[in-house]
Amino acid sequence: MSADYAHDLQQQHGTRTDARPRAATRHVRARIVSALGPLTMLAGAGWALAQPERITLLHPFGQGFWWLFSEPPLYVVLFGLLFRLIVVPPLLEDLEEHG
Image (cartoon, rainbow, N blue to C red; front, side, top):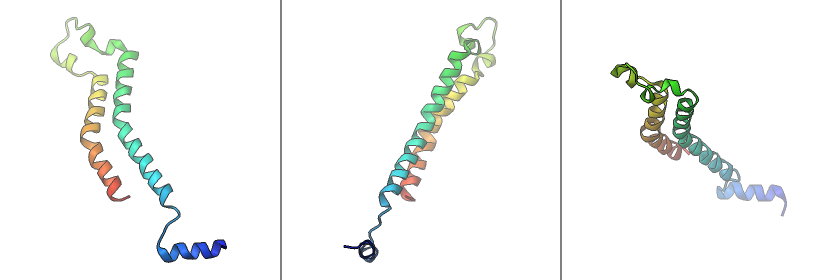
């Protein structure tokens, strides 16, 4: 069977030869979107470990509530968690819907 004939048959029957790469691309995109939240939380935890003096909960000598409350590494972890719980599910639905 010649390649031209096989190509004509695929076009007539509506089969696509590039369906798998697109499905694989959607799968990769979904994994990347799903990994953004945990990677952000990991970055915040790494930041807290790299600069423990920023986490004043470890040594709150004479610090007020707002000083203890406003810790950037903790915010990064919190935003990573919120992204994973609130933003990712609708994005994954969108990726599957428009796939």
